[in-house]
Every structure is written in C-alpha cells, then in structure tokens.
Length: 98
Image (tube, rainbow, N blue to C red; front, side):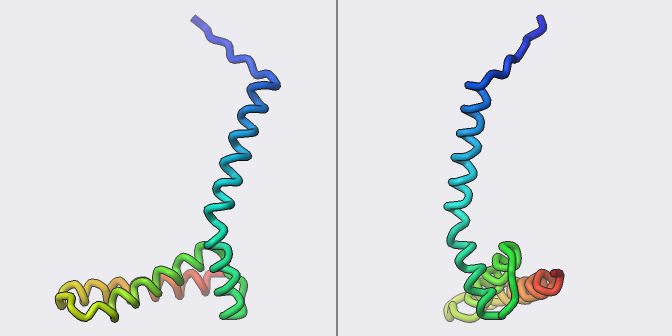
C-alpha cells in the first residue's frame, strides 16, 4: 500500500510556473500599497515599510470615521474615537519600532 511520488522535470516545471504566477499576482496586488509607502516615505522623510504604511492608513480611516459623519449616534462616535486613539497608539509604536 505504499505510494511513490515521482518528481520529474515536468512536475517541477509546472509547480515553478504556478509559483511564479502567484508571485507576480501578489506583486501586482501590492503595487498600490508600495506606491503609497513611497509617497508617505517622501512626506515624512523616513523609509517606511508596508506594515507602517497600513498603520498610517488605519489611523487616517479612523479619523475620518470619528470626525466626518455628522448624523451618527453618540455611541458610534465614541467607538470611532476609541478606534482613532488605538490606531494612533499602534501607528506610533510601528513608526518608532524601526
């Protein structure tokens, strides 16, 4: 009942092609984030990585959610303000971790 798996050139070539296609797809999907990382790096004159960029975006979205909706309940506004405070703290940690 023992099965043997044979690895030949065709099997590895197909696997390599799939891996290459997945890598190129991931690179293509990350292009906007890389552009934003370069943009923020130029603004603050410090080299950022993708994680730091995502924390900056999170803080910006939290600020917009906390400040701009004029017709939300006080509970929702309080939750958004808590989110904003948490996002600022995580952003500060990410930027000073380098």
